[in-house]
Length: 319
Image (cartoon, rainbow, N blue to C red; front, top):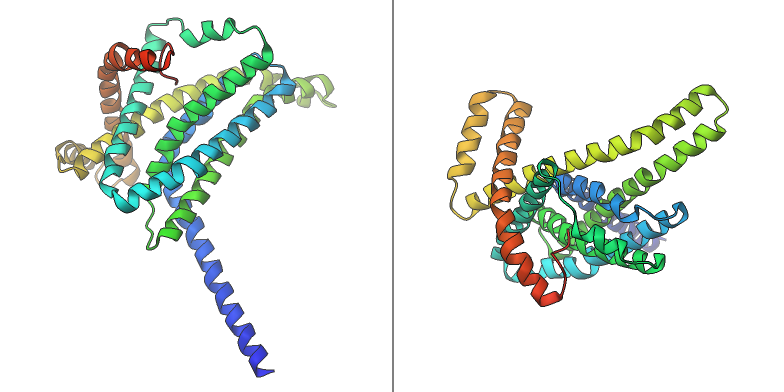
């Protein structure tokens, strides 16, 4: 009997350790995941365009296909690759982060440029040439998964750089949990956004009260404005996050002047205010990101994109 009690005590102790480990994984994942807010917002703002033009009954299946592709990108491709790099070549992580940050700056600046100087998108004309809805759906899903890969690489790299782990397996578990959580949040939000107007139509037609019908009509009218607002927020977040990554990366590589200068300005403008200091820093990071992105537009469109096109046969890099 005493042996059984001792065994139960051991099992209870192991269970406590396991529960503490799970709590640590969740806590670390939440802390690290908070650093990718800008990329996540942009991901949620970009994805709804891939279901535009399809019948309502195909919207959720398309989002589910993209979700599965995103999980494959994060868990099967990126997670082992990043863990190997972090174990055997950790010095590569900062340059990879900066490369992703530069991409975010370019994307954000290009969107701003598009708003200021509207021009036709090549992928829209390409979509119009696809007559078969099934082929168009397949093409859209592949394009979304490719775009997701770029954003997922940035998300996973940022998360990894913010994990405080003392073992390889703890690091892997935290990165995997955070990756799945971010994916569920992004594509759950996308599904909700995409179907919100359908819910509004149903409420407007079948609501039992005038207020319910009015709410339905408000949802229908408000969704285009919400999508536009998400795009603006996502663009601002890209510029802020991208600029911040580059500036912090320069500090890590031994070039702290820009980071220190912004920090000193933020402290001087908002002494004793944590939020004020963060806001001033974010504004300067965003301005830097916009300036860098503007410089990258001709480099990408006139040099990198033609090179990629010549190698892949595509008109431009996906984004």
